[in-house]
Length: 291
Image (cartoon, rainbow, N blue to C red; front, top):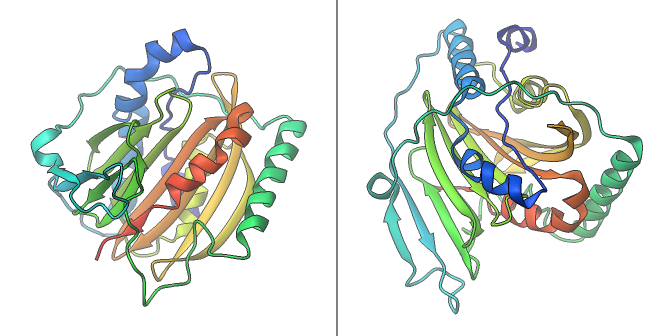
């Protein structure tokens, strides 16, 4: 199966994370809407070819999701505003094809600093619940919406994630894949959730390998852990590389449930990783399945 995935070759789907304010304004729209590019479409087509080789039929879905915002004095989300994505959002139009970015390994000093930070975070969380993997499977209680955050729910692929209220959000269909995009106000931190139907033989490990090789163009794996999320196996990977000659750090969560694959990932410039890693952890830690 690993050979099949490599042969199918996902092309990269990347977003631009610039640290220069002027360029931020130029690329803010692309950060939200850049997914259905040549690379993004290629990702969907390769997934379709992979599923076809496994004789697994494609599933066509329609948009049916909801978003709610927690009140400033209400952390449980009671009394929060909610609306259907089918009423407020449409599929974003494609943008011109992108040139595939070149990902190169990080400099040793940056890599060592990032690894040190990751290990520190893992050690700090060892005394309590891991922010990414939970063993509380049978008695799981849904997370309350955080004060000042917005909750985005996908009722088709059955998941929910929370982001700070001021983050920009977008939704699009990339073939049969459902993609949600979130970008911080300063455009330095991006989080995406891609969900798609899987076939027999696909595992989180194969998803991780394909993501690293074809979506990141190689990159470098700095940290990896496996565990259980909502009662199913999950894998977490942290990668370093360079995008448009800017060193970046990518944190990605891979999991599957009931024939649906989930890739939840973030990207941030390496020089901001230490300052923003808690923020990234907080967002990724809110990912949860819906009943």
